[in-house]
Length: 191
Picture 1 (spheres, rainbow, N blue to C red):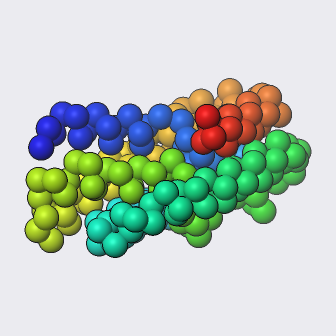
Picture 2: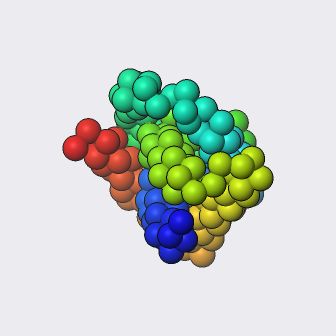
């Protein structure tokens, strides 16, 4: 197994902007670091669970992948557009308590995020299974990839925390930009 290629793939996919990372940044911006961490924990647990599911069911799903991916693309695109709308219309004068990210929203977002689903469905069969098929090696791989994902999420929380004053000063503009990023991500699924 080419570990460099594997790690590059994992880092590029998890650290680049995507729906989960944008929502994390928005949550820091609107609700603070504590709520963003709650969302991050949910996203991380779901990310790891998706990797476990991919490792366990990969051989059974091989014939269904095109159908599953198409359905997830539709659901994921609609959900991202919904999130974009919610971020755009967010009242910047209102207390963010009711708009905060939760563990459950972070958890559910991963199952509807086509970027994450595609990644978890491809990383295990592409990089791990051709070389390692034992439960222990699959488990270690899932743990390593989950840690990389968690580090990516934490990076976005830190970015949001460091630039929070700037982000709060320009709340409406930041919300519009984040909403546009989500719309872009939804469109890119189909291109």
